[in-house]
Length: 211
Image (tube, rainbow, N blue to C red):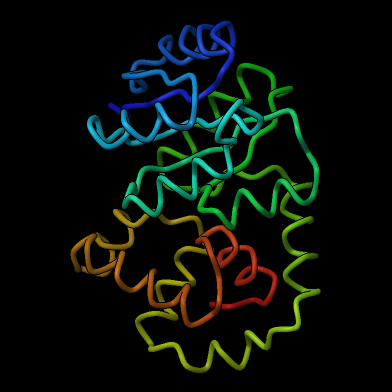
């Protein structure tokens, strides 16, 4: 059972999301937060598996909230769900630590499909948003191919598995190591490649045929 927290300052939106999600046997909404500040407190106490985050909220916005959650050590899968397809919002959310970015105009079936993909550790990013991220990474004046040469064999192996949409749990099982060890490797490879999120790393690895 994947335990989900909803973060949105519109009660009607939260209610609709809860009703849709709870029609699924393996998804459960365990908490709702109407603000970023409330989300920080709830996430620390309940440790949800997945957090669905609105972008535009009063007080702390979604991006600020994600940054704060990550700084507080929250490792849950965080998906931004918003009406904004602005390039800058997409990049900012992913670099703040979001694991995916979904638009609110998705059909209910598409949303549930995306949540189930995220549950399995797969990347959740629409094709047009993937292109935005890939284009931004290409425009950056960073020689990541040179930086990639500094990766250890294990880090390069894990990077390729991230690019193939493998979750930390699956990577750990396939490599015969602990999930905690995988997290350390992921943290190290992101730092070496100057990435803020595994989504950036995955898109870059796919674009550059890293395997």
